[in-house]
Length: 191
Image (cartoon, rainbow, N blue to C red; front, side, top):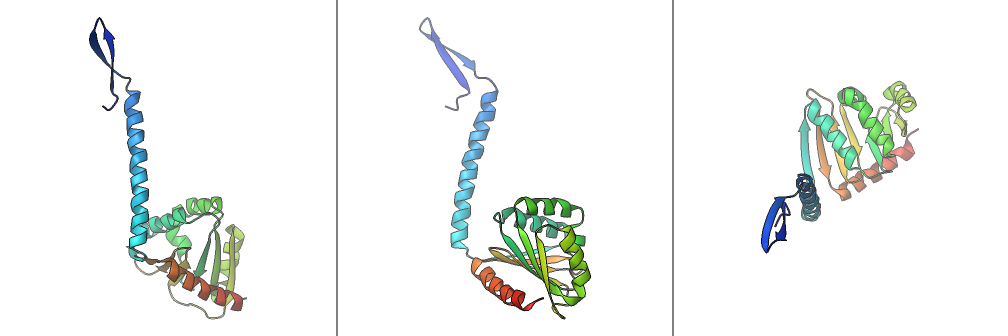
C-alpha cells in the first residue's frame, strides 16, 4: 500500500522484495508536500476567520525573531513606514542579526521610509548612507520617546525600546492602511 515492497510472479508464486531505501525519502517528501498544502489551506481559513490578531513580544531574542519574521513574510517591493523617535535602538537591538536582516530586506527590494525627530538628523544621515533603500524626513521635536511605530503592509508594530525591549503588533490590513494614510500626511509635512 505504501509502495515499500515489490513482487514478481515466478512459477505461479509471488516473490516479494524490498524497494530501495530511497523510496522512504520520496514518501516523506510527498507527505511534506501534503502537509504544506494543508497548512496553507488552514492559514487561509484562519486569516478569513480572524481578521485581526494582537501579538506581544518581550526581550531581545523574541524581538529579533519577530522582526525577522515580519520581514520574511512581507511581500517583495513593499515599503516599511517608520515613525521614529529619539530613543530608536533598532540597530543595537538587532545586534549581530542586523546584517542578515538587511541582506534579506535588500534582496526583497523592501524600502524603509522613516520620519524622525530633528535630534536624529546626524544618526539618520549616517543610516541613509549605510543602508540601501532607506530614506528619511524630519519633523522638529517629533516623537521624543522610546517607541517607534512600524507600518507594514498588513500590520502595525509598536517597538518599545525599554528594559526589556518589547513589541506589540496588530495584524489587520485596515488598521495598517489607516496608519499608512497618517504617515503619508506627516511625510508631506516633513523636510
